[in-house]
Image 1: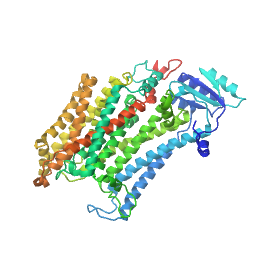
Image 2: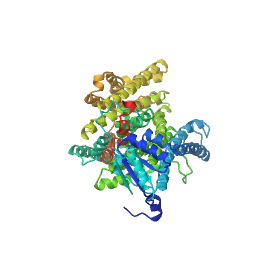
Image 3: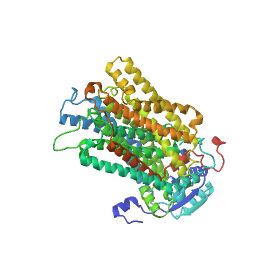
Image 4: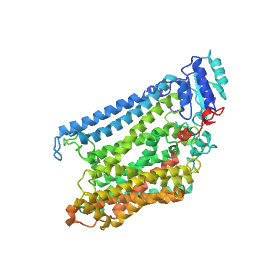
Length: 182
Length: 452
């Protein structure tokens, strides 16, 4: 791995977290494992899946992603910026075009609309990136398996040396085809 | 997303099959691929040489003659922006409608969107003549104290195209990230390094999917009104002017329908060779082509209706200039362009009512080429013929003929578009891996009640 400057390294390569990784080949066994883990009081585990599935989402019962707030704020800000640049720039160089008022709202709606979309989309992207990055920071560097982007589901349970055995047996009971410690 | 298994994919298609089939398209290219890429680069070379001539000797080399000062370059601009539109229709609008079939074709369509907008953007820059002053279009504080005129449709266009390019590029890249991660986990050598870097740490964890799926939904929801606005704004470049044949309220929906019609044509043109070259027959099936053909039929019919409407209103309005403009269009010196457009866009899509034609990929490929020709001529007719036939300036009419410089730049634009497209499909997954899996029944230990 390429060496990064310290602040970047802290941000992108959080220290490893000890725990157990279980690989599942079926969706329903994965969902069952998630339910068991939650019943056992675990909440800080990570589920890997090749595609987003509502079954997993429902079993995890997480709140709706805060990305929507980014979209809303970005969109409103974009609309305001669109109104501001058109009206202010018209006032700064007041020139009558086509006998219309210097600051004419109807043609400026087009600019306001486009800026709403542009800033809304940009802040949505930032929302996805930031939220994923914060989540990664919180979880630390955790075990991963390249099959999780292909056809396997995975669950990583962070556990210290005292709880590893319990987490391992829980994953096995739920139907994990493979369990390893890290 | 879609709970029901897609009727378009046979059951032996599993998650693993999908990943491997699509990852295989990224292997060492065949001779046919290099031939196509070579042809594209050659065309681009012709375009670059023509552009250098235009820079050295000026726009007089192109066929501009009074009163036709918007000609082939602007025609190509509208043509390429139009091509872009069906990509966003398939990737964003059909995503919001939860159409399962879009998953196999949307990545190609979305890439087509990005590269078509990149191509379109070149034309206004070439058309302004002094390309090195292009930044005058951008509102920035300058020593002249000038600001752009926001009441001009050309400035709206700049904002619309700029936003469209940015948003559709982001949408394409965002959708690519999980798929790049999937091919990263199979790749070796330099490709592995490239994909490790470009997948920016994607693992498919629940946190990532939680933010990704939400964000993707909002991007689609933003792209949907955007795509409808972009071609409306392009149409207002014309409709806001008083030229007969341009000044019509029908222009925005008429242009949007035409854009999607031409774009669906281009998607068929692009998918046919890709499907065979890359062995994707099981993922991109006849059903997908049929659905694209249905979109062509729908939008082509709207375009045909718009033509009829334009002529009817020109007659019914009783406005002599409007009547003269449309008479000139159909029976003037450019009758051949007008009738090419009417036959290719008004009548040709009607063949798609026949299921036998809709499900015959060769027939669709041929039709799609004529769709593209027809839609290019539509823009030529609207722009060049309306200007040439402008009754107010009739006495100054010169015959407008495009020159080698017009054709050279146009050939270059095709080379530029196909070069980017070919490079894309060989280096990044041209079919969405994760979204194709979404419409497959997931692996279960016992059959679920819903699918029993």
